[in-house]
Length: 156
Image 1: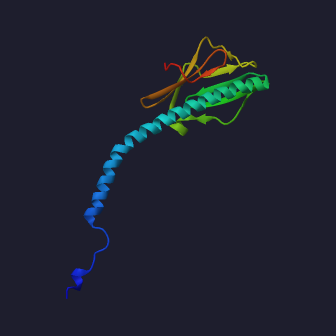
Image 2: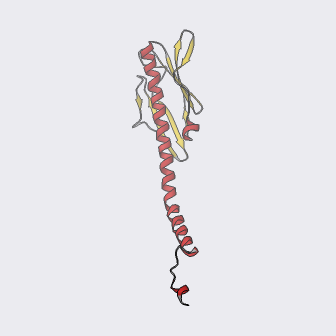
């Protein structure tokens, strides 16, 4: 007779499930904005590193091959070429910074050419490349001597 009331229930109730979902939602609401900001900052840093590495690659190619080499910015796409006779041969694949990191690249000059000694040709002063994503920005600078600076390079 009373065997039915003595049975133990197993499982969870709908109220318990809704409570867990609600608590999880509240925790996510607090965790997502800082995580999204960290991802944006990482995208800007990664793009800055790729720009710096490409500029160093162009300078190294000029020195190694003993010929003029160029770092080229076309919108958000960066590439490196080295002179081979009357044509410029591409060194590596072009990198689209907007596709890979969702950033925009701005500079007052689209091309930096390096002579066979590794000096930047035609730079009057410091050349700055500015990477932005939303409100975040960072920069890469190149001196006339061909040096790449990541720290202390003012954002224009």
